[in-house]
Image (tube, rainbow, N blue to C red; front, side, top):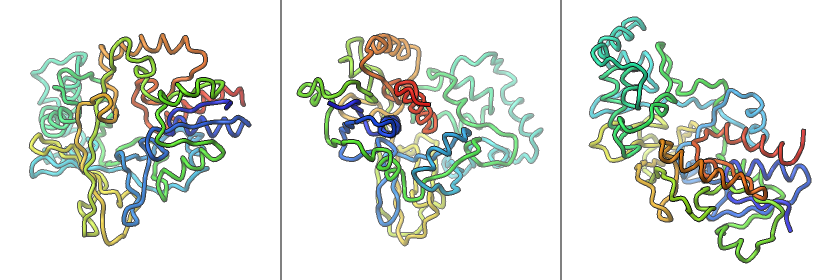
Length: 368
């Protein structure tokens, strides 16, 4: 018997495992994929660390979390500065004075603010009720039409008027010339990729790959004293209240016989006529000089249970209400701890996953 059965080798499961082993506990880690690391898994192609499940840029303002993750890898000084292409126009992201200068030819914050005020004067938006109203109030009609509306509808598969306003609030808005996507003090990419971090975190644990938890537990019901579950919470309870909804992403990755395809790690395509949402050029995360390059086109899609990976929880009123029903069931299970993006039906940045896992481990293991 193990002290802990950890379901999933992503960031939450790996951090908890690392803390448990450090405290002298035994852990069995089950992973349904053929590799560890969950969605932060990276692997080498043509000498380039490829982010198999989409770009993962580490950023945090929490120095304790930054110090913790730096135990496992050295981080470079990568700063995320994406660009957006709308038809034949190119803009800097996030929305800042470079964006407004490219859009309207303005040169000062006052001119940009005046332009936005003019564009929304006749809309009479009070407290925004949805993403469309929130975006219009923040950046005006032009930026909304060219850089928000079609991109967001591709990404979420729903009209902006049906999406919650908080989604757009995560995107920085600045009236200064600053293309840094994140406001956090600490930012970077681990030199050599993320997989090495997970390997070090799981050192000392027993790991089973290609292993489905639900099949495994039928044959080994008493394998551990307690379970750390990071899979979909509705699946754990056999979907008894219905299925939580997600958006999924399909990646089309290819090696190109050139040393530089797009000149930037992240390029968003914001119009409907381009079927993918963005193109990632992986070598730019580590300032690579390899003779070839690797790109991934990202296609957003509706998640279909058992047929695609769940990525982004659709945290609307319906799904949030359904999650609360499952959380009530989870709270009754004193033998199981639910964590991570799928276990808590919540979109988490990596630093917040680590913080939550460390706090969970501290409470569970009663360590200082």
